[in-house]
Length: 406
Length: 128
Image 1 (cartoon, rainbow over the protein chains, first blue to last red):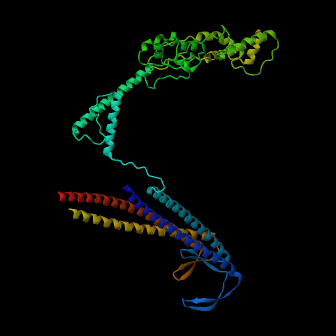
Image 2: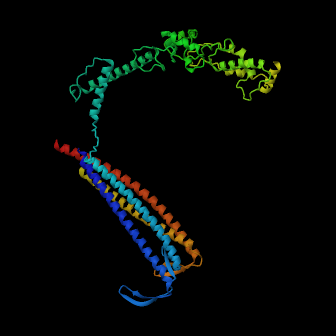
Image 3: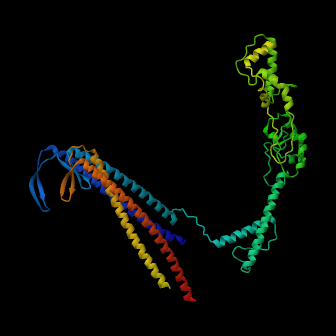
């Protein structure tokens, strides 16, 4: 590749600089290490200096002469603090000063060593890049040349090919355009054709969107668009299928098998809410193509007072069963040890609740095409809420009253 | 035409080099100030550790002059403040110079491009 020699050159240059920096750092480190050594020697000397009151020494007089003399005041040391400031200290104090200086030197040396490490890792990195670039290690750079003209041509061809497969348009330019074989066409005609093609593309896109919508509203097995709003957890053959389907779909397919078992179950399953019983579909027939979601409760099965079955299909069943049981026991025994556990919707309450529930549960369907929520979700708790306005009596008292009544 | 351009180019290069020198000077001064600041901080620390009885001397030329500890401390503090001020001034100067350098570099690169274009044109004109 033509780029490679230049990159090599650049990398070489980079390596040079990095090596230089590395060497500099090494030099610095050596210098500071020397300082440290010097300080160590000095400290040794200072420690033995006050051993004697005076020493016999040869005193240098200038660079070439010495003279025998004495070293006195062996404990008085003038320490240079920096910036031409001196302090007189004893040998011991001076040693302390030296210790502190040695500490700061050690810090500096550490910093330099860190720098050295960083530089080394950088150098390694560039060496790696160089190796990769040269391709000797089996790692090759994947390079794709970028030529704007070729890209543009390729993109146009691709667009045309796409349109061909989508719209099956008798394309005049179906011929092979791999490498600029259209010198005949002038610039202006090409532009005109391009504009036409873009318009065509837009039309096809719109068509596709419409097809999507249609597919969503129809349940056509032919449509390959996955945009239907149906969650199918079990195989379609099973009768007890949980699906959420648009009302329009139901009208068209009229799968009453699917709906029937739903009615027998409780009205509490959320997935039910898109479905309605055939009774409730009356209002929706005007809706036509636009699909709306109308929520309404299906019939609450008459599992309440009329026929307490053994099948527990809703919480209400449990209470009823328990209630009936309890009725029996209290008539039989005098002193039934009352449980200290709170009953969720205690005995006295359930009796009041009974006559009211049958009234509330009339399902009402209001065709409101504009809003998604038809607004008629009735919950069991409304029964409990009705109790509130009554005078609140404690449950114990109530129980006693009930007992008294009996 | 090309000659005029070349001359312009040369001028700009010279100006750039001058700016570069100034920049280097400012950098060196800043480094020195930094070192001085460090030194003075060390002196301050040592003086703080001293008890009042120690004798402090200042070297003025070949002479060691004794100083009062408190006085010495104050002097050092003042010096530190002075150095800080100088440092800040130098930093601003450096930033300024750097910006100027950037401008110069841009100008130079633009001139270079123009120059090259002119050269190419000339070559084509000469050919045809």
